[in-house]
Amino acid sequence: MSWESEVKELAQRRHLARQQGDKEGIARQHAKGRLTVRERIDELLDRGTFQEHGQATALPDYDDKDRLTGYVPANYVVGFGKIDDRRVVVGGEDFTLKGGSPNAAGLRKSIYAEHLACQYRVPLVRLLEGGGGSVKGSGRKGGTTGEPVFSEPRFRIIADAMGQVPIASAALGPVAGFPAGRLVASHFAVMTRRTAQVLIGGPALVRRALGVNLTKEQLGGAEVHATSGVVDNIAADERDAFRQIRQYLSYLPASVWERAPRVACDDDPERMAPELLEAVPREANAPFDMRAILKLIVDRDSLFEVGATYGPSQICAFARLAGQPVGVLANDNRHYAGAMTAEAAQKYRRFVETCDTFHVPVVNFVDQPGFMIGPEAEAAGTIRYGMAAVAAASQASIPWAVVQVHKGFGVATAAHYAPGAYVLAWPSVESGALPLEGGVAVAFHREIAAAQDPDAKRHELEERLRDARSPFPRAESFAVHELIDPRETRPFLCRWIDWIQPQLDRLTGPVSFPMRP
Image 1 (cartoon, rainbow, N blue to C red):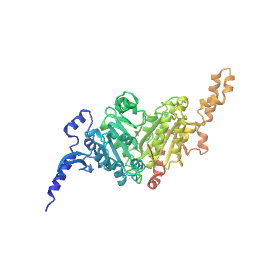
Image 2 (cartoon, one colour):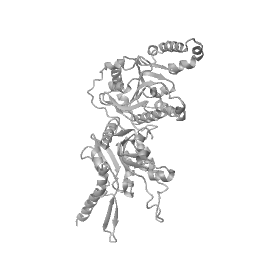
Image 3 (cartoon, one colour):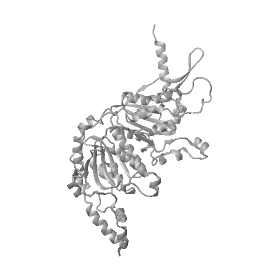
Image 4 (tube, rainbow, N blue to C red):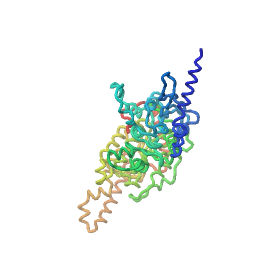
């Protein structure tokens, strides 16, 4: 006796599960300028590599003779796939069904995504669009309700996953409630500029609770979150979001139990860029382009910045040196002279913890005038967040190189050095307890006030003390490893990359303090 009838029914169920919210629902999704979840998965992954889990998961209806009369697919799609021939787990809400708010079958599959990634030790990509729970159906009495008291907290696996595998999430439409929490519980979060909004609560909830009438875009559009720190990057559209996710994951290992993949490099490790000799102006307070400096040093076309518009005085990026993925930290003196603000410190801490979690070495280009000062900085709690950044660097276990480019003043400078750091200095560097101008104004205020020409006296003192801050005595005292010609920076760093290869081979497994949101 054959099982052909059951196999035919299984094939029919799989077919129904792929119909999503029928043709009308899919048409509405396209009319909003958004892809369906299955189209997104196909766009993200290497062609033909998706292997779905739970292909027939659904909410079925039966008549009194146990015949299937209705079939609502799980509105979450999850499975394995490949990005650049590396295995990943990918999952996302199906907005064509119930607006992505999880039905019972969809919720189980969504929770499974983190478990699947951790079990097989591969990166997780979330393609998010939808809301959290709903009050519909919550008023029924009787029957078994709630989770058993012995159940693991639902968010435990989300937190654990951040310490085990790379997680990249994209907001591709309205994302609220539980999916919004998932978005930020990622190492990299990106949202589309025109079609996505990220919200704790939507307009109706905000209006009912607070009496404030705002649109989704006003509450949580890209203009809001470009500077809120909720997402790292803004994408022009969905395909740009997928491109960014693919590039981000290329710098990281599949899990903390592997090392980041070093790739072949056709950019000469001994290359010296002549532009670096004039990259830093001789005028101490003149701004310059730190990103241009970074691009001249790292492997060509390898710099990928994260969070450029949040805490903009701090640059955080991934890049490669001689094919080796590295985390790049640098100050942007065109914003607050590069000072560490509360926002910059929070971005810095998260990035250092991400690099430490996945054992990616760090190269830090220092132009740090100190913590941001003033009433706004005090009200923002800058010193607390700044010291968290210092602690993250101080406890980092990864290889760390420092290039002293320009300024290094105050306690904030300590955030740029980890244990065992390899320290290179440029002739343009100036360091001390305080920036020279502010320090002179404090230490010599009586002498300046008593002078016939206070401005001339102040200038005289500043120039005299600036000569004493030359990097040459520090090099002579072995306070730095090497004082170098700026053009030599890439060769020195690429040699360091070769030195640390055995250390990177051994540096695997979970760290004591992984990255947290």
